[in-house]
Amino acid sequence: MAMLTSDITMPAGRSAVPPALLIGCLILCVINAALLQNALTAHWWIFDGNGLGVPTDFVNVWSAGRFVLDGHPALAYDWDLQKQVQVAVLGQSYPGNFAWHYPPPFLFVAATLAHFPYAVAFAGWAAISFLPYLAAMRAIVGRSFGFLLAAAFPVVFTNALVGQNGFLTASLIGGTLVLMPRWPVLSGICLGLLSYKPQYGLLFPLVLIAASQWRVFVTAGIVAVLLAALSWFAFGTESWQAFVHWLPMFNKAFLVEGRAPWGKLQSIFGLTRYFGGSESLAWALQWIMSAAVAVLLVCLWRSREVRHELKAAALAAGTLLVTPYLFLYDEMVLAIAIAFVVRVGLDEGFERHELPALGLAAALCIIFPFLGAPTGFGATLVVTALIVQRVGPWWRDGKSPAVPAGQA
Image (cartoon, rainbow, N blue to C red):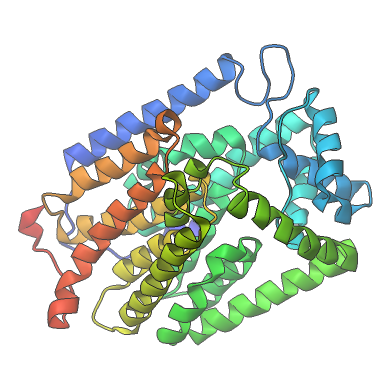
């Protein structure tokens, strides 16, 4: 964390944080804090008014860890057995399943959390995983304002409320991108640790090869293989067999049968299904978008004229656009893209439309609980448009995009 938050070189002519951006972030921080406090006092976070556990995502992490501690890690992937443990932990049943579908290396995290009582593990996971996310945002922005920007992101509350891994995912992607120019080995370690989220690994190999970032590429591969080997040694072949066996069922349940409402999927796939489009149409649009994003990112990362922050912002946003399986808590990665955009704006000056656009992206994340629609996908598109606009001069002229500081 100290390495990430120190030794960041800033241009001598950097601009001050615009008052509108500062005030907006302060307001969003207050909203996040107030919502979290209200969730605790109103008994819709961790425990309800009757002292029973609130059914939510974290219960599958803790219960998977219990299977590991009990000596049966492969059983964590069995939906029926998982639910039996979860019902016992929560003290009540619930409709559907909170299924465990992560690769076996993530069982190390689950087993660690299962050493603690459920409530302690829940709150501790949200708090501890928040710290590297803060460090990554501070390092990206290059000043203490990064802490405020990190805490202001609206999805912070959502991720903490359900006990998901959005903070960890965002910190690893942010660490990969911010460390890449100067510490490629550390960058590769972050990327290798991200292998617990395979859907985020679609674009990184392509751009690393395009940019000739071989040290990052090789280090990430070694770390991923070592993690897989350690998990095989610790949890046995059966855990990997169970993961492979149950994964198609999970995909069928959420991408074919729609057991979770389509509006929860923050992707073009989810948007198409939400408005009644067929599965084949949704997949066609998803593949077209994924291919277009991949080609554009490869071209962008091959360029030596575009500054690294814009490449990093584009890659962070692109990881969200190319996967169909994306919930609102996964939108924590969008905070990384926003941080790089803000870094460029503070260095070169913000254009007139950029701060209102960032406000729109925040609003789209906030209104999701009220609409139940893929508004997070809209937020990703807004931030992507800002990045494209910044990169636009390079596409037209083959030069690095720059904004005069006087336009701040």
